[in-house]
Length: 137
Image (cartoon, rainbow, N blue to C red; front, side):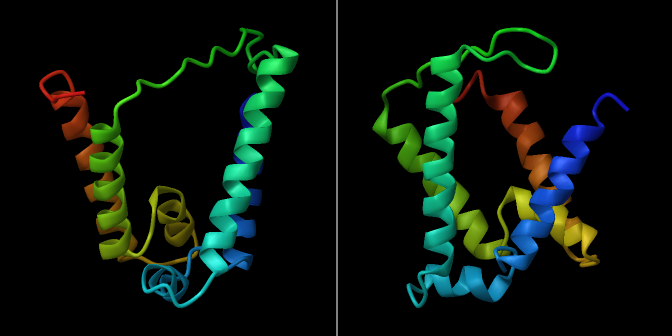
């Protein structure tokens, strides 16, 4: 019951993305074909909210749900890793038609084929965990 609030926020997030059509394969296709601003607008709002949220957390020295201070570390300055990672993420997103968050939303809305995508995403994450020490970072 302690984690119910996180479940509730996740459900609210899923409903919001569904109503905004952010989980629609057609909207994602339009974005990658540069035919519509819809998804770029959603992504821009998400970036704006994220930046404001991080600044708020840093300014107020907020604590997590267990009372521990939230520690935000600066990222390494490496162009290659972000280009490669962004390319891989974008390629997967374009091929599948869903990024990680909407995978769970699509599964919850009754799209059974997305289970294959979820399995592939989990397998890829597991493989990265095994290989991360051997990869150039």
